[in-house]
Image (tube, rainbow over all chains, first blue to last red; front, top):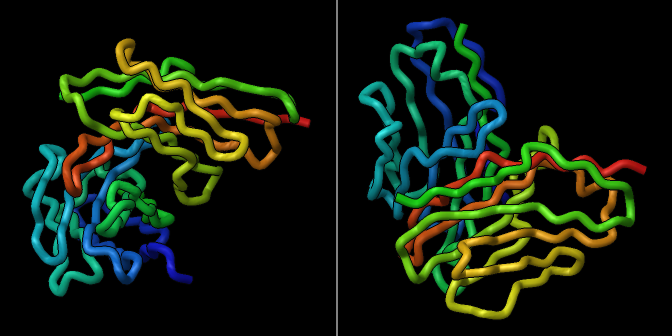
Length: 115
Length: 115
């Protein structure tokens, strides 16, 4: 499978715990995006990497959230001291360069439930 | 700031019929991209069709076509010969014509195709 993969697919945690999600983009893609999607809503942008550089962060990305892409390949999104309001689907997308740079390919998402 | 509005939360259509999903957006940009993404139940989001704002010709992809009205800031999706597999959440999305910017999504329209 050469698509975007995300792990875990589901995560249930208790309020106050830390969680970490992983995203593996399409191998030749240098751009990686994180979005959050709550029930019945469209995805909302969180952050964006070009290679290993984090170039943009949304105001939605509070201090409890941190994202990394250390070698310009996979990325991790960590949420510290989770709150019930963090319950959502976390989507990762990647895109390449060239004529199709604006097409983002999405992974299946990680569904987070905070109890 | 850019906004995307989808005014139809739910729509239904019979197999083989045609359905049109509406989308309006607001932006002060002159160059941008518009997209329709499809998110089937419990499956990942995929790109349906893309439109560059500088192109006057409406994009088409097999049974899917758009009606892009730049002055009215309207971008509707027409699905012809609807199939059961078209059942999904459809999101309209906007992207500025800059390298690596985020997608801004509408709230989505749930389309149900019945036999």
